[in-house]
Length: 189
Image (tube, rainbow, N blue to C red; front, top):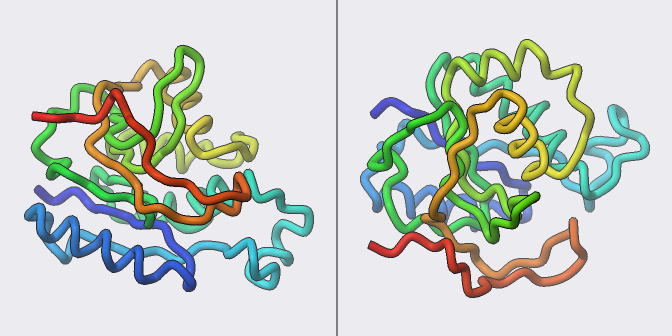
């Protein structure tokens, strides 16, 4: 497959990003299709203060997606995956059928009104074009809320089982350590 994998990270998390890159390579994803992208670092205001002087930590991943990841996805003209650097992937995402334009393959928890965690999300190239074209009309929000909103708005959301877990890590967004919970949606062949 020629789909691209974009891993969002910051300098202090580069080890996690490199670990995830190797994780994907071990699952037979071609190294040339994996791109590590550095975003704004909330602990370093000089990386974003010029553009977002009142940035809230809950919105930083949204801005990182819109400012750094989405333009690269759009330029590629390919189907793409969005990944967060603390993700562990257990199956090659290419092996799963894509029956819709937004396929959520990695998450923490699925509630009736909300999906927690955007660890691995597939975006069809036509959806990427639409998002890029309309990017200025979206207001900043948690990234998982954004993906769910887009999926429902455009009637293109597919979600079933998660093929990911996470590395225990400190989350600036929630101000505490996140670890793997018992995920009843975890894919287990």
